[in-house]
Image 1 (spheres, helix red, strand yellow):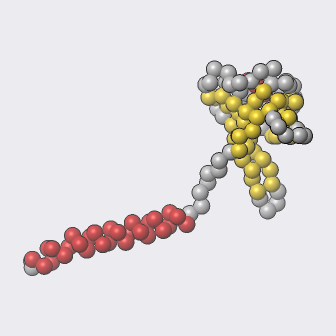
Image 2 (image 1 turned 60 degrees about the vertical axis):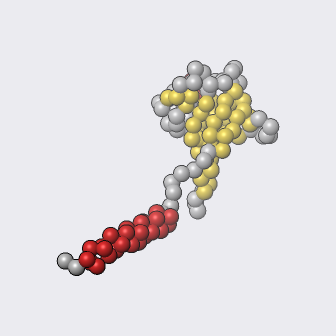
Image 3 (image 1 turned 90 degrees about the horizontal axis):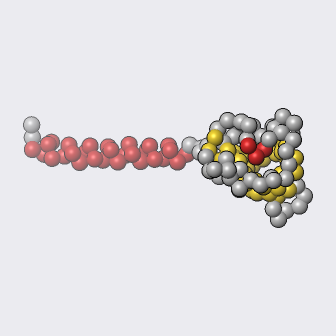
Length: 127
């Protein structure tokens, strides 16, 4: 084997590695991300539906109130522990008057747009 072949092989491997890394980075940047940062809202619950799957809230500093559907979302209890199953302590069916914080993600689709509740924080719930 020639000395020049041995010396040029690491340089060639480094060059190929940089090209592959560049192609991978380019592909990664073109892929869509499936992440959204929820808008944090808080207010006083005006009513929770009979099935606990929707609630109305008078948002702090905003009028009028707003209503939201409620699916299976993570929620934090008054002791600060997170849960991933229902029922949500501060949104029990037919309850009202409690203070809550919650995260909302706005979804815009050609056929409709809506706000989805991403999480509920009951840690400061009163009422």
